[in-house]
Image (cartoon, rainbow, N blue to C red):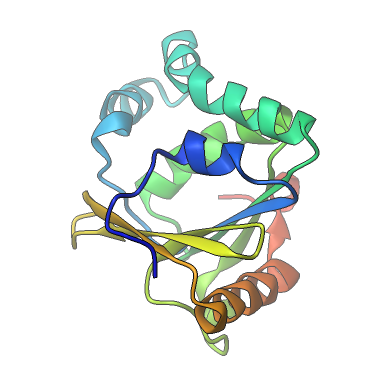
Amino acid sequence: MKPNRVPPFAELVADCHHSAVHLEMRDVYGVASEADDFAEWQVTDEITPASLERRRPWLDLVRETVARGVVLRRARIVSTPVSEYIRYEHAGTHLNVEAGEQVRWLPRKEAATLALPGTDLWLLDGRLIRFGHFSGDGAFTAHELNDDPAVTKMCADAFEAVWDRAVPHQEFTV
């Protein structure tokens, strides 16, 4: 287990050499940094130039990380029909893909027989997990690091099981 201080994600991924995988399992996120984008999308039903600019730091980080040879994969488990928030995420995911991130979607009913961790996570180089904790309404509450080999193996196995069943972004419709 790592100490309580969790470095920013950019710092964690800077020390990543092979892979960074992200497992998302919520239908709604109430993350403050996305509030403007989500509200704008609810009105316009599109990712606007202003939204693209707000996303630029993430997209640049993805490009830089992939350029170093790190494979970035994201798997999203979603209920169907999807929530309005998931429709918003889907609308902007092409930007992540264009930046070099691989993204797949898995309908929740197809994940019913998988053993999954209790919360979202990033697994870096198969050795370090950054768990993301959220409140019931989707607000971010905390990050937690874990490097226990048994836990990292369990999370890696869970991610790969989801990835194997999931649909590539380009083929998933909402």
